[in-house]
Length: 103
View 1: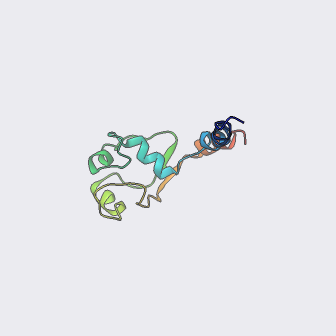
View 2: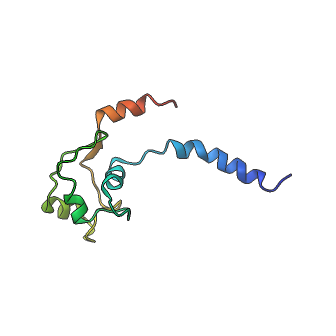
View 3: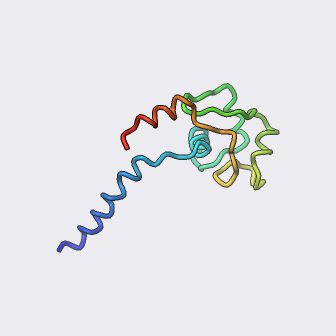
């Protein structure tokens, strides 16, 4: 038996799970507005969000300095996956679209 076959089978089994892996709304928010691709939002990146409204996300938080500092719970100067960004959600339209995906 070719020793590579089990590896190929393992990789093939992982593909469907990877293809349908949907990030949390907070992760999608960070990815969307992270201009330098460091997987976190600086204050300037956060403030640059003003006036933008992506169709797949909605939030009820103000885009200002006070909100940034409130959300930066670990006080590292960035918003990242360790900060709880609970006020960010997927839009109803996006959730309906996900619901139509084949299982």
